[in-house]
View: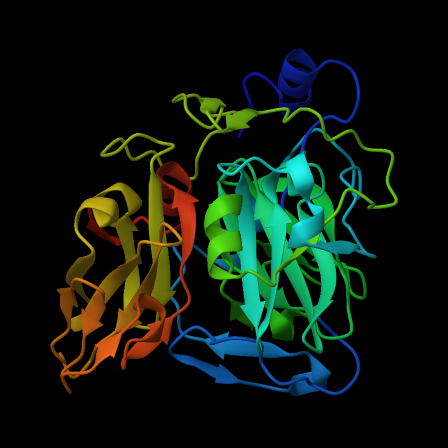
Length: 372
């Protein structure tokens, strides 16, 4: 599988000399006592504690054997750790951000146990992984600019770094204890020294792709990641384009690397909110969710729905095996008990979901149910 043009050449072209490339994100965790899961695990997963790795052994069917993902990995144009993870993140209060962020700038928001943090996209595009501690949890907040995916993982006592390799344009993270490979979108170990762990998956938590203005409005007491990363990296230009306004790679139809599977049903960079469980996979069009606040479908014969969160310009996905009636109303959603609920607190089974570019989601999950 080849890249045309190479990622390194592309980055040098659009950004000039300097840091080139931004390769995959993923994470593995070992050592110490197994911590409590952070956030909601993927539905259908069962916790395991073998050898103190905080894995989940879950039943999400992959589109190929584990070795098939590793065999299709390509160099992103940089060596291992050529894109430096942030291992000692520094934060400031929202009131101190000033003009560093414009209202429409994208941020990746996380709220755990009442503590909220925002990770600006313009910083993560240069690092892709933040090894953080949030509300007492050791976490990794990860972002892959080539696939438009931001996902949070429990990292236990380990840290994750950028391997420099990609699969389906997605960042492959490695853990610094065993150096195993974890494609970010899959969150699953596909190459490592211990074959017994192949196919194990990381515990996930929700990372919300939104804008600085929206996140700050909902979470007034949020902390914000600063540029004090300890790395000689410039943050004045995104090597791929811009999101505010959208331009460059983020808008056009060009891919830097061949996808695992081509699917031209939608614009390759159109954004879907995807979820995967033991029932199957589902992708809801984010654009349609802006027009229709409640979308429903079935996955493997089980009812699912996505509820739009207007304030954050995002959506939450739920499994609804009892087919309980949910209705969109003026100020949120009405449950089967007649009570009013917000999009992120419906009385159903929440499923971790995240934004993804269409080509990336379809490449990893070609058998996905699509609501567009």
